[in-house]
Image (tube, rainbow, N blue to C red; front, top):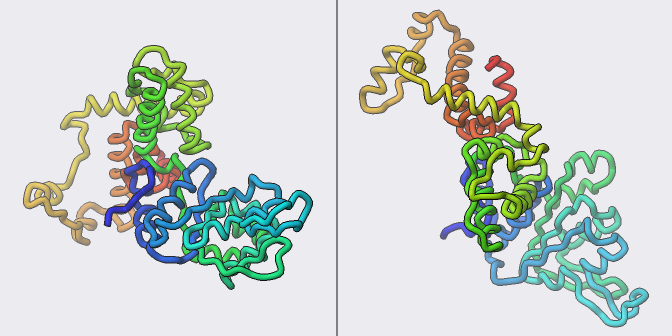
Length: 357
C-alpha cells in the first residue's frame, strides 16, 4: 500500500529514512515520540502516522501542551464533571475521550507540569482516565503520540521530566531532521510555497534566479520549514517582476551566506571550465574497470604497495575525492553536497576542515 505522507514534501535521503521508519511504525499501536526542532513539521508527520494506521478512520485529536495554562490543561486532557470548579456549569469530555479509538497527539509534551505527567503515565499503563471532579475511571482506547523540541534526556537529568514517563513515551523514537540537513528539499519546498502563494494572490508564478536558489540552499533556516513558508509568502507580495533576484532577499540571509554563496558561484564557474586536463585522474586499473561492464574494481594490497599508500592514506584520498566531487556537483552549496554524500551538513563541514578543502 502506498504511504500517505499527509502533504509532507521532500525527496532527500534524510526524509526518505523518516518515511521508511514511518511505514514500519504506523501499522502498530506502539507509542511514538517525535523529536525535532521547532518548525520542522512534527504535526504533519504525526498526522501521516495516524493516516497510515489501522485507526485512520477514527479521530485524530491534537493538543499543544505548551499553549494551555497548566491549571486548565488537566481539564482539557481528561474532561471535568459539573461543579468540579468555578464555571464548570456542565460536564465535559476531555481530549482523551474525544480520541477514543483513534490517536491523541501530545505536542510539546516537554512543557507539561510534573503533576500532570503522573496522570499521563497512568493512561499509558492502565488505559484509563479520571475526569476532574469525577469519582470513577473511564477506559479509553487511544494511541498516544508525543512530540517535543526539547532534549528530554536532559530534562530528565535536571528533574524537569519524569524518567518513567520518558521511557514509556520513547518506545519508538522518530526524529524529523532540520531543513538545513535536507539538501535539495529547500528549493523543492520554496518552489511549492511560492507557487501556492502566487496562485492565492492571483499573480503570475515567480521563478528563483539560479544565484537566489544557491543562496536559499546555503542558508541554515533556523526556523525550518515554517520560516521558509513565511518567507515565500513575503516574496510573493514584495517581489517586483517574475524572477526572485538576490537583491530581493533580506540582509539576514545575505549576511549569513554571502561567503558561501560567492564560493558556490566560483565553484560553478570553475566546473564550467573543467576539461580533460583538469579532470580527476584515475589509475589504469580503475579505467579498465569502467571501460568493461560497469563493474567496480576494488583495490588490492598490491595497488596500495605500488602507490606507496597505507590503508589510512587510501581511505582519506578516496574520501577527499568524493567530497570534492560532491561540492562541485552541488555548485559549492554544502547542504546539497552533504545530501549527495548521505551525511549531515555538520559532518561535511568537519571533513572540509579536516582536509583543508
